[in-house]
Image (cartoon, rainbow, N blue to C red; front, side, top):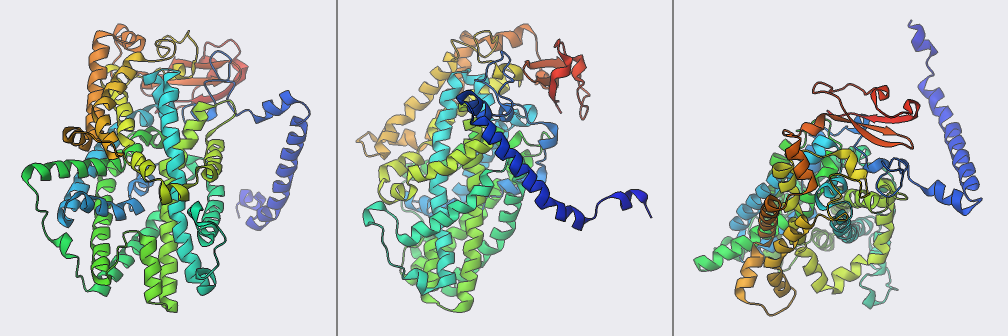
Length: 602
């Protein structure tokens, strides 16, 4: 028998040793905390994030470990992980059809528009993902290279606010499925529970219990880093497909497939009216994934291959959204037509099913379906909102916040945002959130033009951590890229009047038509203006790229050396360095013994 095998501890022995190791770790953390509380300085030093001493100038304001390029051992997202991530059978897709029909389209027109809008969205997702896949940095670092070391705070803070609010709203939506589960499990004991919360709050006692339980379930997830979350996307895909299909089949069989007459007939509109309705619907469909386009570098920085995310983006996303939206349109329209109700939300539909068919087997089926839906909301909410918020937090306050701490912060901010209050009474605010995508698209335009056209795919990665005027490329004008912000303002100027009309202002019909194409218009106008302005007034980085005659993504072959207390340096590593670790002794740093991390390019 293999002697090495005999020398290895058995699985049972390792299991018995786990409590002891855990206890030792807890005691060690306790001792560290006690030591840290001795003085104010030691306490704040203890709070500091790992890697915050890696600022090229020795400061702590521009860098921590989570802002640095993803180390090779953490690049573990492959084709399958991205397919599960982008396979989007989300709750939004089930109700997206109602948005299209409310705009004025019939059922088959809605399906075509949804598919077309998601194809466009997927193309932009693939385009926006390139910088993260090549340089393995997230959106905050990409934003620094485009908007400047200080200007990036505006772009990142804009997304952080959006992510925090949407995270709270989606968590409240997910808690409705927990409420379905509690009713299915405990029956009338839960359903008839007395309400002790005032109606003005916007949530009942039942809803608060469900929300709190759902919130608690998110705590362990926020402690995970993105490279540890692949299993969530896998699990939610395997569970939601049978749940979606089962609910769809029930609706069609129960109603014998009789859908509402309004969906089966064509819209009686003039050609001009119909064209604007289609553009409005297309804009709404793209806006449904507007923040996802901005988030792409935060996903692709974890990729193990440069093209790992592209095929899932172009195939999984539009097909899955079209299928799930079609199910939502047909199933709910059939139920509404035959039951005489208006049930576009799945949790209301599940509640009504239990009311009409209060039998053990039905309650069990609803329990399983609601659990799958709650898991689906969790997976999409984690990917779409809490991971970006954690990344943004790491950039906004890198000395004390990293990704996991930022995710925890977002979790606790939920109780300050009061999502149930927003959905119950703040109609103008929810309308504002629905149109917020055009503000994000005006950020995407300059970002894509900078990377693909003006910078030729080159980013000086070390300089996105240099928050000082000595930064030769990304300091721009006192930390702000004025050219990018000129383009941003022009990009949102055209559709903003129509946006005010959506919020209730009296505006001309032409302004509303412009708003109907607001997302695409903001993106193309901001990108075009940025290109024109930079041709007449190039930035330092663009001048340097031209002077150095850099080719396409030539800087991807540079290596990042992270030295504790000494900052970062780029050194040439050649074009054939895939999989080769970097020898820190080759660095020009004088203190070769201080090497902490070596991060290499693909």
